[in-house]
Structure formats: C-alpha cells, structure tokens
Image (cartoon, rainbow, N blue to C red; front, top):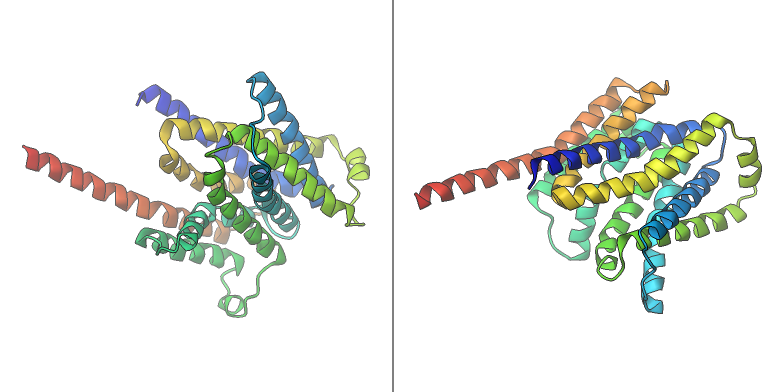
Length: 314
C-alpha cells in the first residue's frame, strides 16, 4: 500500500469519527429548541438532498431491482436508519451526549454478536472478552457506579432508548452486507434517508405535541447551524469519508477508528459547556480498551506466526 495514501485514509477516518462524535453534543444542544422528531426530519431531509446532488454529480442512477428487493432495502432501512435516529435523538433529550456516544461505541461489537446469533455459531473468544469489558464500562457509567441500580435494573430512559437505537443500527449493518451485493451503497443510503424520512414523518403526524413547521420557523441561527452540521457533515460527509477510508485500509482496520467516536463526543461536549464527568471518561477508556485489546493480541499473535514461518524457511 502507498504510505501517503494510507496516511490520507487515516486522516479521513479521524475526520469522519470527529463528525460522528460531535453529532451527540451538537444534537443535545439543538434539542434545547426543537423536538427530537423535528431534528430527525431535518437530518433526513438535508442528507437526502445532499446525496441526491452527489449522485447526480457522479452520474449515478438508481439500480433496476425487483419489487421484493426494493421492499427488502426499504424495510431494512426503516428498521436500521429510522430506528437508530428515533432511539438516538429521543434518548438524547433525556441523557448526556457522552452516555449516548458510549452506548453507540458498542455497535461494532453488537453487529458481530448479531452475526454469530443469526448464523448459529459461537462468537470468538475475543468477541466475548470485548463484550464483558465493554459492557462493564458502559454499565459503570449508566448506573453512575452504583451497584444497587444495576441489580434493580434502574437505567435512565434516554439511555434505554439509545441502546435500542444502537441494536437497530447493528442489525441494519449486518443485513446491509447482503443488500450491498445487488445495490450500490450511495443509492442504498439515499433510499435509507428517504425511508427514514417517511417513517419519522408518519410518527410525527400521530404526535400532537410535535410541530416541525412551527419549530423550524422559530429556531435560532445557532441551532440551524447545528441541524446543518448533523445533516451535511454528521450524515453525508461522515458516510463518504468512511467509504474512502474503508476502501484504502480495509473494513477491519477502519473499524478501529470507531473507538474515537466517544472521545470526540466528550471533547465536543466539553467545548459546548456540557458536563463530562470523570466516571464517563473512565467508561470511555474501559470501552476502548475492551475493543482494542483483542485486536492487538490477535495482531501480535499473527506477527509471531509470521516470524516463526520466516525462521523455518531459512
């Protein structure tokens, strides 16, 4: 691999995870003026317009699919994209941005475990180790270090909503592997944004306390900037940067950068003046360690095998 190209990919992935991490405190700030459903409508609408313009610029056309394939793509998108955003931003209205980012950091691990469950095979030892360590870090934060809250299953409603949203996204990520075999990712993502916009708009229509049009007319310029950031950079920009990084470094190496999301979320929350406790920082450290240690151990083992093989050849 070209070293310069690899360095560019690293920078792109760091920028991507910064955008994703920043969405949590930025979204938390925007929720001070608009309802969570209004925020999600803005996110989907902005992302859909940007993706449509990008597809036109790249001369991309929608694929020719069967009715069953279209139904499957839209169904998966409604569950994953719609479920994630509904759980995430509804939950952020009732919990800290750092908590939300910490829960979402479990997504790659949850995707792996969902794959093992659906394929009816036992997860690897490294995945089990990561699950135990990461969950301990997350539970430490969600229970505020109080064992009695854990034993009594007393969790913040917002944290519960974000956890459900994370599971929806993990299921979507796993199922997307099959969809991507017959549908290009940019059109598929556009379908996801439009499907999410449709289902959230339907939910909003049956929520009398939500008034997207009136809220949108009354928002401040600062919150408008928040919404544009989430839609343009946190959604479309992050996705395109992620694709570029994965193409250069591979999915396994790129997934390591997901660990920076809660770090950037905490830093951005601090910049916004939102509280970041020492317990939350400790939880972030535990989760990152749980995700990285098995990978580092596996890489070290592979290096030993390669050295032994090279020695035996000599």
